[in-house]
Length: 172
Image 1: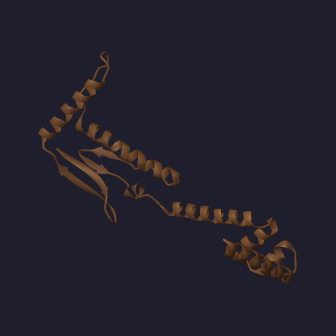
Image 2: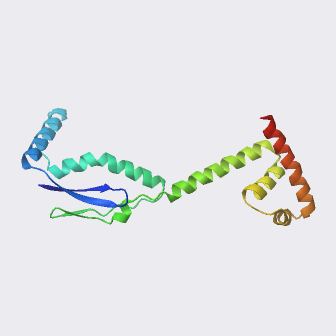
Image 3: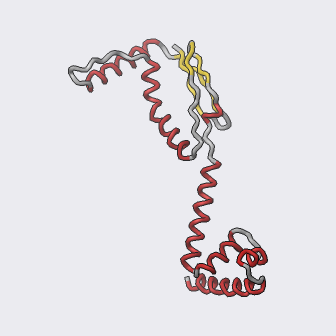
């Protein structure tokens, strides 16, 4: 019997066909039947399963973990598997996880953590000014327009806040 399996190569998904002897499948089906019969209750009816059903169950844990990862990334699209005459057809682009959102989430978390540290160290208006100018890349003139103040006043306040931060960092 032939089994078609997908695995992730270094650059792309690949389909590999394995030739497995019938005796090995028979032994696998018998062992699976014996284990399920042993764990079943006395009134429960247990029938031998086909080899593909057993293999699908073994792969179920891996599939579930793949789904969990991709659901967290909001990038999960269920692949389109069809078994027809021992052929596996699938849209392989759906099987490749997309990690771009994960990187964006990590960057966003780091940004928010840094903002929170700045807010804990400074007064609210000072923290807003430092976040806007240093982290968001806003110029002093733009920030002055935003708060409806003169750029000269904002520059002086910004210099005072930098001195405060320098003092805090030198003490730590």
